[in-house]
Length: 126
Length: 306
Image 1 (cartoon, each protein chain N blue to C red):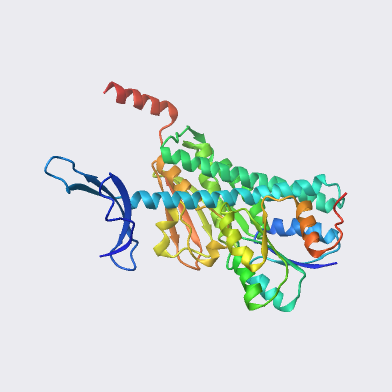
Image 2 (cartoon, rainbow over the protein chains, first blue to last red):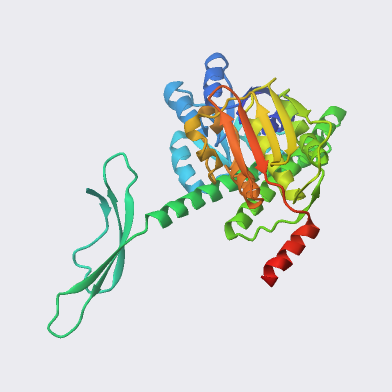
């Protein structure tokens, strides 16, 4: 199964996604902001990054930029966002090959999307 | 004086129109915003003359920007607990997680986040009430020991998460006072919430209270990150949040302390702050004695008679 990095300043969001993804056999790297995530990525290669948009120190766009421009990684990137100005955000995220997933979210749908990207059969359907 | 941006067109003089432009005194200061109207005067023999009205609208523009920031911040703040409630509810209802620890955790998070959502809505409502001045005080006899004990109990969960010790240091005898119980509870909750938020793990918060002939003094003292004296006045401003990394790392809308002070001021009191960066903060709520309801009523009738 895959190794997935989660970056979110809200501990409950990190935890609930962790519970769901671990159930499907994935390994989780938990971080609380973009800077921590970039640091973790130096040590640990991952198959997908699931990040919040609004985070202290370094936000989701900053993290995505760091991953593409500094780390030169083409790892799939999903950004969770509750921001109203999503059109503007898409303009920033799309050229960097990231995708948006709206908050509030239903975990099973997010897991399905993650596993679709990873190309693994989803264990949460049916 | 330099014109920063101007949308004024030289050919636009035939229709009354409003244009907006900004003028900055220097690079550092915030530019002032003006609205300019050009109204042609079409009187015989006066062609080519027009009336120009220029009005400083900087304050309206600033207020509008603060309101937009607030709406965007509030939307984000509301969606965070909502996201968790929804995600944990689905975790429960999916039936895929039967580990009793996970189930308990789900219930706890849903309860906690529902409370957080309710508190946020209360805050937002109280701000809008304060805005239109409709906030009415329902003054009654308040048992301060009970009020403060409940206040501490309400935030115990938040404090436990960070292993923060909250002490209630009350004198043996605490006379009841005349105040609006619910609104005073909001003040205590906001001050305690603030203290816990800006105190690192393993810190401590002490709540004290004294009633003397001068009035009531409630203190909330923490050993947290502290507030630079230059920021003391600003922390009570509506929607104000310090720029520091430590403050931005916490969620918040910048209305808690504003609401607290407004409520205290409506009681005829004020909140004082003693703090320095890195040295913790002490918020001191001073409330003057109010007459009990019976004597207040008699005072009113005397006032009306006179």
